[in-house]
Image (cartoon, rainbow, N blue to C red; front, side):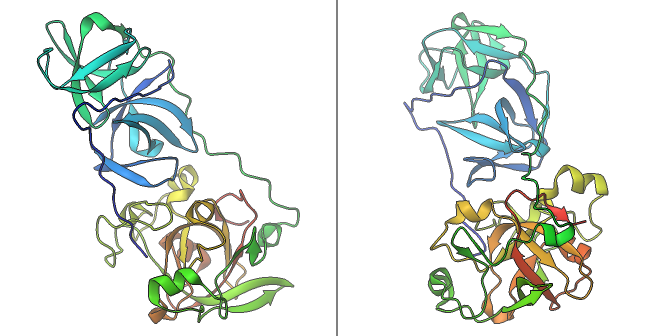
Length: 350
């Protein structure tokens, strides 16, 4: 349904930690009050990092940096961290214990490998305190060397979108009601996911219609997400992407044009009653949906982040506040929904 459980990750005693950061690792500082740490770009949330936590960045993909996070590699959104000049140290031993305190008598939190780099936080005699994923630990200075941080990672850039088909406007990105075996939910379709969630075997709402000879689902809309969405808890996350729903969008006043251009994924998203049977959540996470206002022809492309709305609302789709504004629609007005061509850029369709 709307929220998915948050998975807690910690370091147990004796846990062997093997991280593999590129040689050009760069120190980052978390700037959000809390920052989701994911198992992949736009993947499942595995933990949260507090404001001010220092992390050693690895690779960059789809606007996310990889970071060392306990026994695994995590991914954090590049829009909620800043680069810092914090020093790094590189492990020179084949295997090095990371301990709770600056002494060999202290319990080992885990082991680092040769070539790994960590943010250096403090020193005590021969020992160096390092940020070891979610926890700080100590390593002996004889087995690490100071490094300047290397060349900084490249500025995060979104993946290159697939050029839309020729045709112009929404007609050029329209991709119908079926894509790779997945279906836009609509009245009359059996939906095993809906049956498991709400006990309803067949989708009850959403009429199949055509506009300019192209197929859409027509149904009522509402909005969700952002700091003004009091219908979700402050920690509630989207069932598709695991993102914190209150952290999405820019509030009632809306973001600046620059904000939308820099992070369109934060402002153009959608929830529908997807069927996970033919395609799983990972597939839906990467899908693109086209939404058109039937009376004006205004159109936006959005990405799935959540499952819903509840059938008792009689609505077919929940949109981001920004998408609703761009379409000129209000709650319980009708919109037209279809797939957009894979890779279509998010936001208004010109």
